[in-house]
Each structure stands twice: as structure tokens, then as C-alpha cells.
Image 1 (tube, rainbow, N blue to C red):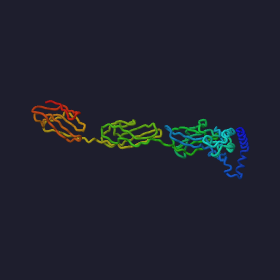
Image 2 (image 1 turned 60 degrees about the horizontal axis):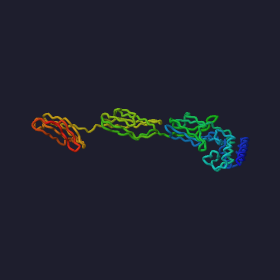
Image 3 (image 1 turned 180 degrees about the vertical axis):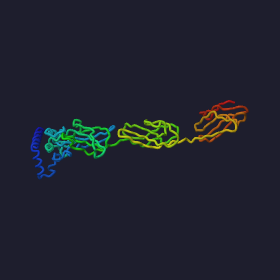
Image 4 (image 1 turned 90 degrees about the vertical axis):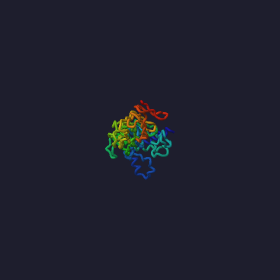
Length: 367
């Protein structure tokens, strides 16, 4: 049965090929309705720039660039070797009577039903229609000018899923891309423009944006974008070092003031700059003096877990004798909590102080 079908198909093809032009004219002037002649929808009366347009063209992000995908289209070339001819009867015979599915849909004229004798018509109507490959063009504007990015031969196609399919990776650099179908005569068909997806860096914020002068800070950024990302910090004179390429640089802030800083993150899609104001302030410091009309001196200092400050030394202004030991306690905001002296008629002084882990303080000195 398969041999009979093949023989019939070949006979029908040869008849159509021999009488090609005359048969097409007869079909145009006959009384048949468009539905009755539906197999000729893919015939060569359709211009090449419509008939040979690559199918299902798409573009997606891939690595550091884009991946363009598309599928082969040349009605009648069921063998998908680039040219419609007598050898394309064989795929019809091999799939004769099969319901249309993704594995054989390129053989069916109208894309529905089962594969049958009507599939011979496109071979005759598009006899010798040839596709040699494809070209990828890129442009910065929808209307061009277009630049050639790559050329792809039919040998690079994949028939694993049925229809011959192509995939090619290209580097970013243009906003618009298109797939051009090539024939021996030159450019034959163009897909609609494909707009390049973008995955340039996005910076959502940086931290910190303020700090105290002459203190060390680690800066970080919240960002996204296609890896790899490169960083360029510029603190506008508000830090040392003032610039850094580290992802999270450690810097020491400069004198108090407001500085115009920027972070620029770049990848293969381009750079993104995030400006911010770096506010540097001085801490709320305090300065106090303590003493009287004679000689008073501090020699050691320490703090406890609550931030209180202890100062020890000696005083003559407030002594019971020639010189007494002095102990002062300040709150962290500079408030004097208490002052104590200790000594007798001679010379007494403290030389060191420590906060004890069990509570209280220890003072050492001489008497």
C-alpha cells in the first residue's frame, strides 16, 4: 500500500510540475471557491517576502547577551533541506494518513486534519523555491539602519522537535533585531522587529547614607542585573579612600558636611548610576574642667558597661592635707554624677583605676 501511495504521489507531482503555469492559470479562472482550492494557500503566487518569513521568531536574555530563536519556512520543502523538489514527496508518503501533530505539522498544507494527497500541491506550486540560510540584523532604531550580526546556514538547524528550528546567541548592543531569510537571489523575507529585552543593573539603594566624622563604615548596595556586575563608588570627598571598585568597601568618613556621592554598577548591557548625599556629622562631644585654685591633675580613666566615665588623679584645691586622691564619675552625656577625695595630712594620689566584673571599681595609688 505504501509503494502505491508513493507512486501516485510522484505521478501527481510530475503532472503538476510539467503543467505548472497552465494549471495555476486554470485554477485562477475556474469557478471553484477559495475553500475548495485551499491547498494553494502556500503556493508561489504568494510573494517570497511573505512565503519564506521565518516562523515563531523570538528573543530572550541569555548569559551576557541574547538568544534568538526561529523556525524554518519554505512551503513544499517537506524534507527541510532548503529546496522544494521531487524528493519532498517522500515525507508525504512516510506520514500519509497521520493526524497533524508537532512532529509532522510542517507537511500539512492547512495545519489541520490528516496528511494526504493535497500536500503535493505546494511542491508543484513552489517548485525549486530555495532557502540557503538566515542572517541576523541589529539596529538602534526600528527603521534602521541595519547591521549584520551573524549568518546561519541550514546545517545549524535542529529537527529534534519536528520543524527545523534555529537558535543563536549574540552579544548585546542593539535595541532591535530581525531574522532575514536568504535565497540564492539575496534577501527574500524579514521577520517583524524583535525588541531586545533589557537586564541592565538596577540600584535600589545604598547603605549607610550618613555617619560620624573620622569613623569607619562598610558601604553596601541593594541591586540587581545580569551578572557579572562591576562596582564604582565615588564618595565625593566624604571618605577615605574616596573611590573604590569593591562591592562593599570599608572607608573612613571625612570631616562633617554633606557630600555628593555616586555608585555606578555596570554589566554587558550598560551602566546605571545611583546618586546619593553622604551626610557626615560630628558626634555630640562634651568637654568639662574640674578643679580649684591650686594644682589638680587626672592620671587615668575608664568606663563601665553603662557608659559611665571614671577619672582618677590628685587634688590640692580640695584636699585635707598637702594633696589628696581624686575620683570623678561622669554620665555618658558629660553630667558629673559625683566627686570624691581621699587622704590625710600628707601627699596622697591615685595612679590607676579599673571597673570590676563583679561590680564597683578598684583604684590604685600611693599615700
